[in-house]
Length: 233
Image 1 (cartoon, rainbow, N blue to C red):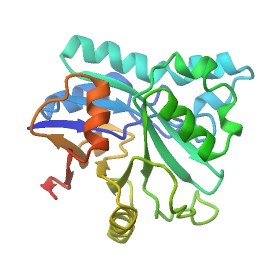
Image 2: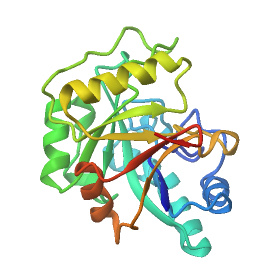
Image 3: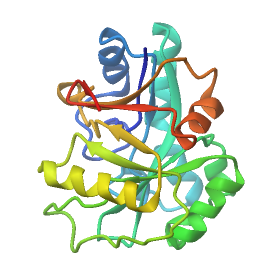
Image 4: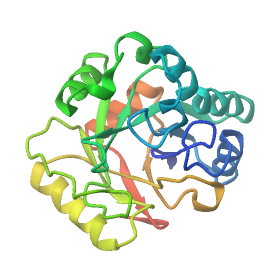
């Protein structure tokens, strides 16, 4: 079995992050994971990258968590990939994980994308060979001003049906129903912000994806299995 974390935040970039990137990588290495994707909050979310003025300065801050994790992963023998947690319709808290991108894509191809519609964002991710996962679509929390829209027919590639940050199991079950209703593959993510909450929900494969593109393709093809609270579902 080859296990991957798809939803992880670092204190270098996410303002709600409680552990540094190196600590997070070490925690997953100790738990026997093959790899992880750093999905820090983007500039339209709770991110340190929202504070600078220019787009380049914002992106320089945004990629800090990833690069710190990548350096640690290279040293520890852990695959570390780059992702984005993009918030649409702020402050509703409607979140999407963009996977399969490279950090350099953000500087030009995604310039000012915090002003885009979610459809524009998804189209650009797809144009660059990435995939988009709907994250915790039914979560209710005090930082969300309203319930997120269901958006049937939105061209997402998968639904995060188990999320470690959901306060109620009902939110997970509703997400699973969405995936079934929309005919989308399912994934899971710990949504971890610190070492104390690592590896609660994640994905696995019987064969290890050769690279990031292969991982995304296998998710899109429904080849990932999900682990929820240490149980394969």
